[in-house]
Length: 162
Image (cartoon, rainbow, N blue to C red; front, side):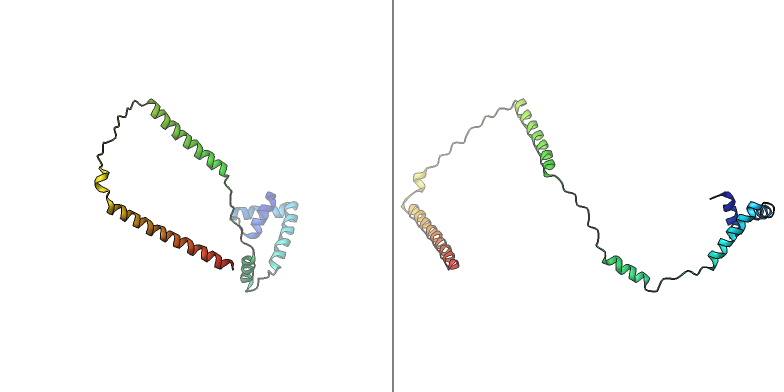
């Protein structure tokens, strides 16, 4: 915008100081260009003041908000992570730890002197006819329970087929 127009708009709107107002009034009276621009801007100002702005209806906000609510909500952006990247990072750390472990084992001077303890377990003292009979009885009972459950499952499958 031209400075002449800015000054004249400030004068028309009443946004200038008293000295600027006197200066612009003298320029309008003396300068023909100022006077013609002032008349044009004054006519525009009067036209704008005569316009009657329409007010929206009382339910305008409600109607707009209903339309906004009907719009589809934007879907959150989901990024897909490539599993190869995750596996390669995991492999790197696994191999690093494995390498450090192997290096530590190779460089260590640890000697193990491990001897198995000697156990004197006399089996003949604990095994007699009664323990063998108890062992065989428990085995037969467990075998019968297993056979019963096996036959029940098989019977249930035949009933479902028919």
